[in-house]
Image (cartoon, rainbow, N blue to C red; front, side):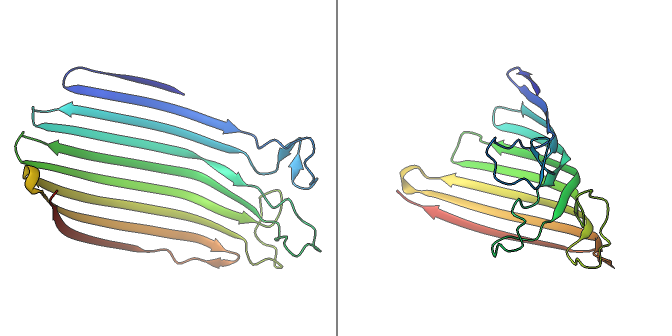
Length: 220
C-alpha cells in the first residue's frame, strides 16, 4: 500500500492505493478435515483486492467548504467449500464450488458545508455508487462446469448495482431556545442480474427510487 497527502490553507488532498492478495487460508497442523485442503491451504480461499482512495477538500470562502471523495475496488475471491463432507452427518451441507470474480466497484461523493457564522448553517451532498461482479457456482472442484444434471444449484451470474442520491439540510440555532432542522433526500437505485441458473437464462432488470423531506426542532 502507498499514500500521500498535502495541502495549504485552502486546498487539501489525500491519496492512497493498496493491493492485497493471497493464494489461500492456511490450516493448522491439527486441522481435522483432509478434504478441501491443498498444499496446506483451504481450497478456493484465495483472494485479490485492489483499492484506490482519493479525498480532495477546498475552502472556497470563509463560509463554504467543499469536499470530493472517490474510491475504486476490484478483484475477486473464492468461497471455500464446506470441510464437512460426511454424508452421514445430519448437519453437513452439500459441497459447493463458488467464486466471486471480476469485482468492479466505484463511489463518488461531493459535499458542501456552509457556515456564514450566524444562526443558519447548511449542508449538502451528492453521491453515486456502482458495483458489478460475477457470482458463479460450479459443479466440480475445477470450477469449469455447471452442466451436471444431478445438481440444480449451479449458476453463472453477472450482477450490477447503481445507487445515486442527493441530501439537503439546513439548521437554525436559537441558542438556548432550541434548534430547527429541515432536510430533504432523494435516492435512486438500479440493479441488473443476468446469466444462467443451472440451464435457464435469467431475465435481467430492476430499479427503484424515492425521496423524502423532514424537519425537527428541539429546546434544551
